[in-house]
Length: 188
Image 1 (cartoon, helix red, strand yellow):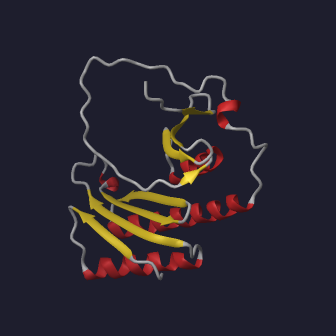
Image 2: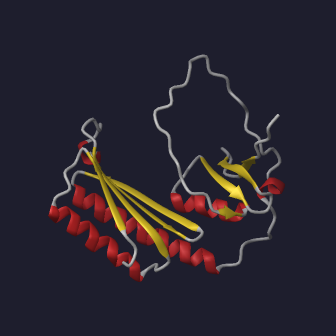
Image 3: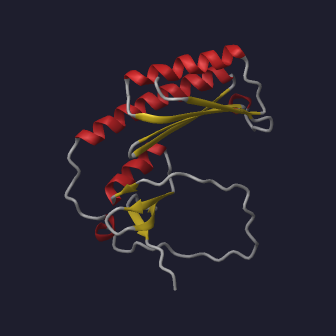
């Protein structure tokens, strides 16, 4: 792959064998998708996993112009976790390439298709604890592309995106009945 492959580990030693194995496997993805700008591989060992077969985690993130593809797999060995994550990424790449070539529906916005785009708010008595902060690059896209990215990334609940049509940030979420809603933040 002409792109730089960054490998990060947590609670795991990156041996030369493991490094070579990951690089060899990830470089084979180039024949499936050659538009990748950045590739990140996160390998970790979770000592406190409930199931022994979930202790090794391999995450693979591919970023390119207008897309982010991510796969994560767990296994009892780091090598099998890498293999499973690569297989999952191949499936996502083929799904991504197929969806780019198809015509997209009736061009109706999600906000028009969903009657109530705002979820019911629930109040909690306990103070929330923030345990993780995440930063990511945002690519302008329309609502249908946001739905595609949400599915490709495997996000089940929500997806934050910059709406190219309205020039503002939106939150896309999946409702219990299987439809989608959009939250449009406004400063009051």
